[in-house]
Each structure stands twice: as C-alpha cells, then as structure tokens.
Length: 181
Image 1: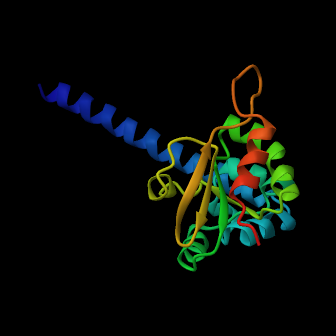
Image 2 (image 1 turned 135 degrees about the vertical axis):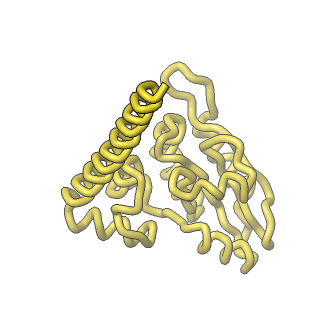
C-alpha cells in the first residue's frame, strides 16, 4: 500500500512538473514573439488597444498592421459615446472569426462610401463585451443613437460557398440607419 501511494505521489509530481514547464514554455514563446515585433507594431498596439503588445492575443498582434483593422474602439470609449448619445456604428468582430476576416475588407469601403465612421470592437480581446452588448455571433453591426441601440445586422458576406449577406445588404443597412443631417 505504501509503495502504491509512493508511485501515485511520483506520478502526480511529474504531472505538476510538466504543467509548470509547459506554462514557462508558453510564456517564453509569447515573450519571444513580442520581442521580435518591430517598433511600429508595438506602437500600433498602444495606439489601437492602449496596451503593450505583450498583453494582446497572438491573433490580434497579427492584425495590428492590417489596414482593415485601424478603427478600433475600446469598451470604455464606446460606453462614453453611447452615454453622450452620439450616433455610433459599431462592428463587433473577432480576430479568429473566418466570417469577420472575409467581411471586414468588403465592409470598410462600403461604410466609408456611406460616410459612416465604423468603429470596430474586437471581442477576442474584450470578451466581456459579448454579454454587455448581447452579441450572439460575429460579425455583428450595431447602431447606437440617443444612448440606446437602434438596430443591428448580424452575419458576414458570402464566402467560400457559405451563405451570407451581400455588399448591397451592408449598403442598405448604412443608408437606412445613418441619421440625416
């Protein structure tokens, strides 16, 4: 019986040791990846997300210099816009969402053409916002006006044989919901 407990203790100890080594290895990989980033990419992390690049998830780091993801809004800034009753169009996306990756390059020029300042909130980085804004799937567009949600459009463009929305659906969404000046 004592031998069995001894062997069991050794096995548990080995698992704990493997866990610690694995955690250290992951931490080293993250530090090495961030250490290899150029100064411009590190600056983008600060500019867009307000944090050091080491605090961002790897998928987000890969998108920092992508021209399609340069209008990021932080949750606190979005909350201020809503509280100030400012009209705000928000694109809720995730850096790991294949539908978002296909939709963003189609959506941004349409928003620009419609005269919409489309803010982008990265749910991969700000996970609490899924619940805060009742987002069920990405991508999702939401319009806020007078301090409350007015409407939303959920879904991405058709791609790779997947059904989805057309660019005309997005054009209509923006034109129908942009407050007339």
